[in-house]
Length: 158
Image (tube, rainbow, N blue to C red; front, side, top):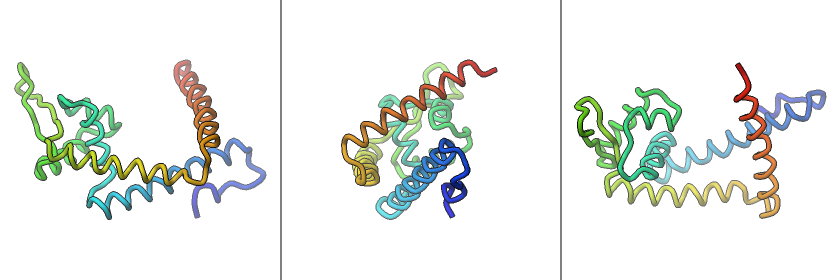
């Protein structure tokens, strides 16, 4: 039973919408995870880490990666160790700080990530294939309103 199935007609529509959004997110994510595993023998966290590094050609410090990925440093270290062992990322010393280093994609890692990113994009486009362009634009705009309202609420919350 998915999250949405727990809601009943007597629940507020906003709650039912929230559960539908969660269910859709979980279904799409499950599909992407499976496809990454089948096609590239990799995981979504590894893909996410490489995506962050692809956006930062000079690399990122480990604490920056943790913050951007919203995970603990230990999680980032474990993934980084695996990717270094596979030659997909490299550690670079930070001048003036012997304890710190930056992590960046190697040419091999950049090539693999670009291939994964192309596939990932097509999987996401496919996930929304039931919607036409107008539906997608409308949903995007409406979710933007929800996002703005939620952010405003966080800014005034104690």
